[in-house]
Length: 345
Image (cartoon, rainbow, N blue to C red):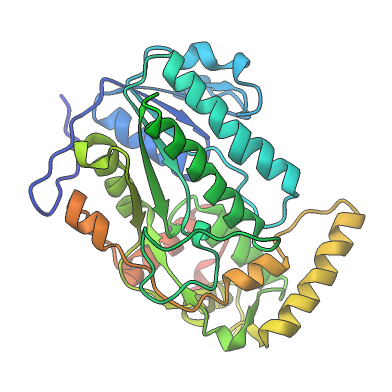
């Protein structure tokens, strides 16, 4: 007997439950959470990721070579693309291969397989880092040589919207904020490791704006966007609606790492110069980490982002505030051995 229910919009919006769902990036933080949610609703769920996982009906493959997994997606009603280069340290070519050409490959697979809706995960990074306070879906995407991840996300949106405009398949785009919660590598594990190593640096006194959104709220927003007719052809920003400072958010990681006070800070120009040198050194010795100038730009964002459109059209209503989200995150980090109980006292 099914006990799970679709999220209900604040205005009574009730998305339909798809019979079958296919998810790229199915082993990732958001991908696996989506698989769990749709499975609980009784949907047939399949997926693809770099490594196969038979228990979750996930086959091995990537967006650059869809021939190895396209048959696995055939017949799925809803196609969700979460696969991406989740890094601020990659080279342009990789972003082009995965976030542009790879997204086109995913669209081709969805169309050929008979999917009715294609939902693509973009990011608020598509707006860059120097957007105005209150930015929304009408704010221009970022272009330029900096902030590669955001530029690539903006380019991926163009590919998806072009397919929708051409009538190939109904498409929806969601732009999550800074998604965190149990299982998050980007906003729990990576910054915690940086804090442990004393390498967590925040520009401009940590005054940069951080837009955290708990994973459960992102799942609710995604299911509303994917299952409602209002989602077709639209972009929706999904955050908690309220922002915090980078200093406040990452001071929690600093404490989890057993350190007192708050992460160290430098003026943005100095932080960019320092991380540029570190990034170049890492490239020379083939070492990967996320200490890059683009990370400093991300931590220097100046404004909050509006979720008015998602509220109005989808009835999207975030439910988990920052204090509760961090409490749940800390419990998970303890459970997996990343932090110890005494560090949080």
